[in-house]
Length: 142
Image: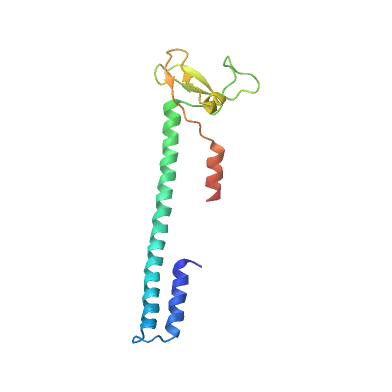
């Protein structure tokens, strides 16, 4: 039962009590129910707006993710032919935005906060580590 339904129920109960307009206590009850009704409608409107805003934020997040992927040129996984790779490689390929060189980013270095330096132009690169599994779990819950 929603809050507006609960307030409507209370209003219906109050109507069956035949509250007197001349009694101060009855006037207080009627005024309280009217205030509850206004608050319930406001909360309902806020919930609707929040849902719409959440949907817009999700769209912006997806669009930004696509832009970041395009700008930084991140691949999902390393192809295994970088110098630091072994069978348990945990890195990704990227393109340096300064010089265009292909670089390999070790996820362990990102997690530890180590700076990523382009081996070609020595530019310090900033990457944000995002866990896609958390994003999928959140969107599955909705």
